[in-house]
Structure formats: C-alpha cells, structure tokens
Image 1 (cartoon, rainbow, N blue to C red):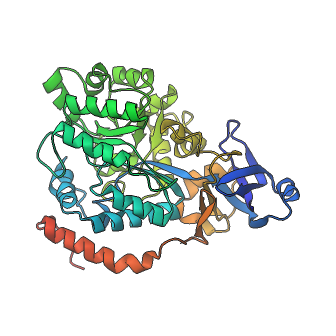
Image 2 (cartoon, one colour):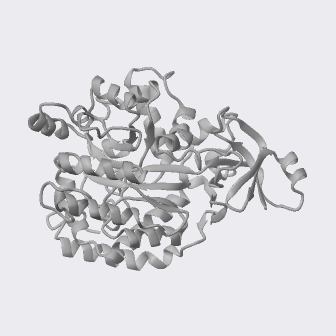
Image 3 (cartoon, rainbow, N blue to C red):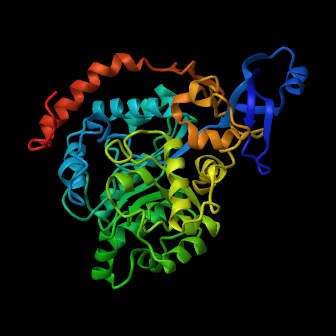
Length: 452
C-alpha cells in the first residue's frame, strides 16, 4: 500500500478539501482518504510520499483529442487561413498518408504530454486509421484511453465508405480490448459528412453494444447552413427526429446552437465537449455564441477537450478550464456566474459524469480508480500559496507544475518525468516522420513559414 500526502481536493459530493490530507492506494484503487495523521496511523506499514504543501487532485479528463494527424505537424498550420481550409487542405491530406507507425508514434507523444500535464483519461476524437496501434501506444504509455476510428460516408476522403463498410469498421474497433485502460466507442466524423442511414446505424450499434458515441457538430455556422438546406431544420432538431440524441452521445463542439437546440440537449441528456482554445484559435465565433454556459447553468452534461495540436495546440486541460471560465464570466459581463471551482468540476467529476465514467474516475473517493495528480506548490508560481488552492490552480498555474501522476495506482510520472516511455529517444523519429508526412501529403508547399 502507498500513502500520498498533500492537500487533497477530493471533488467528492461535498467537494471536500482536506488540508494536510492523504490518499491511501491499494493496487489500482483508492483505499482511504482523510487527514495524513489518521491515514498513516491506520496504515503504519504503508510507504508514504509527498508533503503537506503538495496539492493532490483526481486525474484530469480530456473529452476530445485527435491523437493522430496533427501531432507530427503540430503548430504548423498557419493561423490565418479561411474557414475550413486548415481541415481539408492540410489535416485530411496528412491523415490520408498516416501509416500505422505514424499513428502509434503520434499517439505516444500526445498521451505522454497529456500525462505530464495531469490528463489521465483521454477520449479520442474519431480520426484514427490504425486503432490497434494507438491502443498499443496507450498501453505502453499507461494512459487511460477511449478510442475512436474514422466514420464517414459523404464526400471523397480517407477512409470513407458505404454505410455497412463504415459500421463494420466501427464494430471491429469496439472488439479491440487490450487491457483495463483501453476501451472504444462508436465515432463518426459528423458535421454534414454522415448520411442519415449512417448516423442511425451507428446509434443502433452504440446502443446494442452499450457504449458511447461521438461526432463533431456545429463548431462554426457551416453545419447549420448545410442541414437547413438539406432538411429544412437545424442539425440537432434533425438528429433528434432520427432518434440519435440520448445519454449515449457526446457531441464535440455544438458552439452554434440556438435555444431550442439547448433544450434538446438537456431533455435528451446528450453531452457536449467544449474545446475553447480550438474555437478561439480558428476564429469560430465562441465569443458570440457561448451557449455552453447556458448548458452548464441548466445542469446539462458538459466536459472539456483540447482538440488537436493545430487548434488547441497544447494538450493541457488546465489551460482549457481557465479559458472556459474566462469566457463564462465575460459573456454576460457577470464575473459571479462561473468560477475556478466550476471549471475544475468540468475537468474532473462533472466531465466524468458527462462521459459516463464517473463511477470509476473524476473524484478522490474510496473504491474509485487511483488516478491522481500531484502539483508541486514549491514552484515559483505557487509562492506564496493562496488560501484557496483551486483558485490558484486554475488562474495562476497550469500543467507545468504537475510533479507526480498515478493511473490505476501505477506511478507513471515521477518528479515531472514520464516513467513509462523515453520521450527524448523518440524526438528524431518524430522530426523524420513529420517531414515525411509533409512530403507525402504535399501540404505546406505554399505556406509562409519563416526561414529559421
């Protein structure tokens, strides 16, 4: 048994914060939570680590992350492109050229960064070509992961196909079980790139297999325009008429929605994953259409995501949480409506509830998985410490102060360093793979990169 000492931000139903507390870990689960003196007295033979000045939190959740494609060309796509061009003239061609080796390397790097920033659970966004290789990456890095693979049947593009072909690929991904940390869900690209037959068939598959489902929808205004032209109704209204909405579904984005669509999401208990840095970087109008605040205020199911390394770029959930909180305060010129503690909920227990895994993770409670993050409050940005550690965590810190990370009780980050993979040894491979991808896909031929 191991005892981890520090101020414990439990995120339990009472949102208790235990000053100079401790978490006892037995195997993969949390065995006890309480004051350090009491926990140590009860388990005198356990190994104790940490100090009273440390900050212990449940592992963070990233509800929407593209693990492949963007990573090997990260922060390379110009940020002044017209709407849609970054996707269809850069990202999709790169995905089309991704090999299995590329998928595994890309996922390894992204999950490694995620863990060192305290993200212990990642939900992939549905654009993996070789899910078996990404599963291997997750097992190697020791990150909790839910995998999604390509699913679309409209337009020409990589991995498109007829409805039955796409659904067969989804079924094969659901059968991919490599260990307790890796699972799979039904994933479609979404937008206006899925036929009614495909989205209905995918919904039936998710319900039959009792798994979650995800797709992208309405990050910009183009999906509204397309659905209105095709169906004479807005996207969520049309999907609801098909029986697609429900508690099994987590929609990525849903930025440009109206009051009726907010009502549908709440009534059908459909989740939304908000990726605020992506919308800001891509100029998609979040500051005009921040309906995610309405969802939150009305008890809707909501989680946070980082998206991709050419949209949110840095895979750090705390940055996303701070930006979401700032947008929430700013929308109605009301700083009282949303705060740091609310943002942390989205990154932990409330995000876990939205993604259907709150029985396993999201809070520090006895019996749950021992997914834990320890922040080092001896670092300069924490001096002097605030009497409200959550306020300082969200507004005054980020993932760089993460010192220790545990996943299912396994010590995967120690003293800020990943223990499972030698990331430095992958640097040359990543540079070579990124260069080869640019060449094979033909992207960036006219990009205005500075000469270094």
